[in-house]
Image (cartoon, rainbow, N blue to C red; front, side):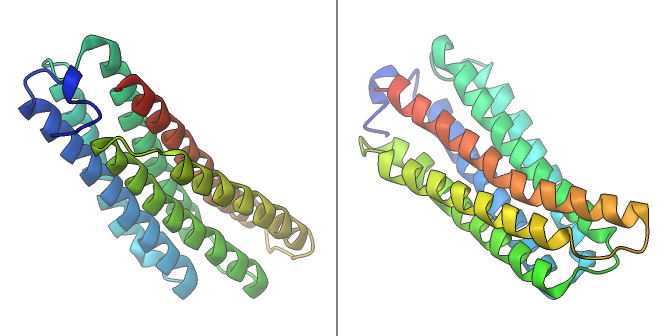
Length: 212
């Protein structure tokens, strides 16, 4: 059982099941993020369906986590923090799905902008990997600071790419008002994923402190 939290576990079995559900939840986020990266890189909007299915599965996992929490897993004082983490992971999945939908509405992206968007999508995938590592570290008394620092560094890298994308977008002609809106929504949603991942990492850090 988890070394860092075993003193406050109630029963143990329910808590272990919830922690495994969280790992599964983050894994679905990882799959969705990687599928989005492939979609952007290959210009394959048909992958939107797969991402939507992963988001629906993630929503089922979030509800299962909530149900088990309110059935009595963990002490009352930290149940809210666990549920908030589940919400944040779900918000990440929602944003990946939104990004995929906006991408499917764009007839084409300037190659230079596409390359930058692929880089953002790659960073998002790496951040999810770090998020999984951070959550898994709750199983031990390991210091999470190195993992959260890496997540923050990647988020700042996305901010820099966002500025580059916006500069190039200002010079790219669009065929209609709605094409411009969809492109803007796509980019804003894509770069916003990293913010949500960082929020989830912050919640894991809070849980790490609370569970000691």
